[in-house]
Length: 117
Image 1 (cartoon, rainbow, N blue to C red):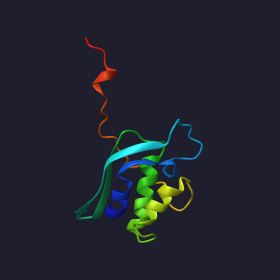
Image 2: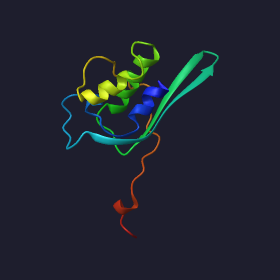
Image 3: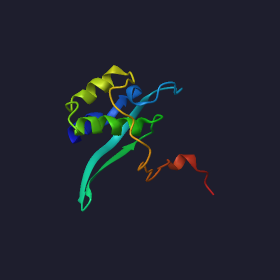
Image 4: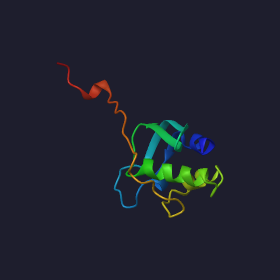
């Protein structure tokens, strides 16, 4: 999962990871950091996927998480995610991760958006 995640870091056209029918000027986004973290506990293991980017498309994070999980369970090799990215087509190869557990941690806005007071 971590190897696949590293392939998504950078500026790419993430059209294959957005929900179909989402009108946008562009589906190009920059992922600055994408971490796959594993935490063992008494009840098993949790996988956290943390993504820092300049913006997100509709369901982009959930679709990336779903694709990474497909790799994690061994359905696809890690290089498969590059073929998905290159295809620019959202298909049914991977599940959209459910919204439970999705958490927006922080939003950074450039200072230029704020009026001087």
